[in-house]
Length: 350
Image (tube, rainbow, N blue to C red; front, side, top):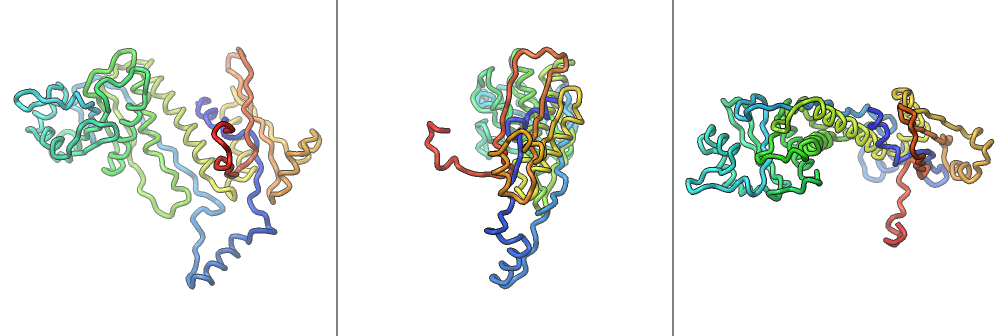
């Protein structure tokens, strides 16, 4: 899980905030009153404007299984298909053995639906059939793209996971299974399975802390079929989950407005990471007085524009075995708000 915490380090290593320049901006309460008078109706404060509700990180269990897909039972079976997989023989039956077997089990409904929906297997395409009375309640076809995705890329498989997440949320499915119609090469199985898991987790996540209502995904478990089994694959799936947890934490920090993610709030998050993963992380937080002792004049001059005190964060990661091959420092901009600026820089200056 240490990798999850490390995933957001490239975004912030120090923090300070210009949350509100009192000489220039009215307070939120005063601003709301002004808008109310101008428009003739009351203005309700945005949910979580100053204190966000706790963001929920998706908790999905991934399992690798080697079973007959036609025998799987659950809410939704998703089949990733390429354009080649949809080819039919002279009897208008799927040439692909997995699609043929499922289509026969459904009495030709799968072939009919794919034709009516103009499903070609293009990446990003998906169609879902509701199947009452079957072992799986829904069957989804998810486009994988070209017939032979490059073994070095995981983009197509990540897209499959994202499509599964979207379909599961729409159907309010609590469990799902994913199978790729065409056999995945042995050297690609680990990365492909990991990409499907990552796409599913990031696809399910939605930051609703500042929304009054939201439709939450009920997805709790995903079976990945046909990718083998064993400890190596299970570790790869867990690693994908850990990385996604770090990505989601980074998104939550970036998406939080400046009056919520103050320098103090970010410093608290850094301290939590160091406490939770104390075997590899340490955190040192410098306050204004400590920064002054270190002659950090420029830093303090910028921080003086904010009503919030500065917190300089030094979050350090060391390998658990103590074998340090190279030291790498990632220095944050020192801001907890979007300062802009990219639009005024030439491409070569970025």
